[in-house]
View 1 (cartoon, rainbow, N blue to C red):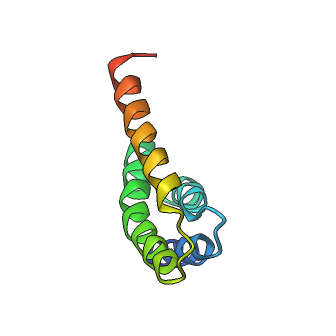
View 2 (view 1 turned 30 degrees about the horizontal axis):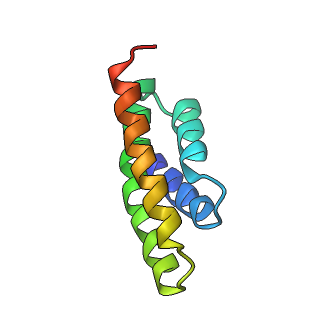
Length: 88
């Protein structure tokens, strides 16, 4: 029951643009016995549908600059690959 409530709170916060994942991680860490690495995994899974909804809404409102989005995506992928290749 707690997890459902925490997901609802995080969804509301995410829809306001304040980073629902941060709240989700905080709530799950403080009020459940779920291990930290599992909480981070839950947060990643939580991020997928919320980001899809955000993208869909912004596409509907025509607020996406696709030229900038393509550049950011390209260099984001390059940065992720570089990060994965270099162990820091």
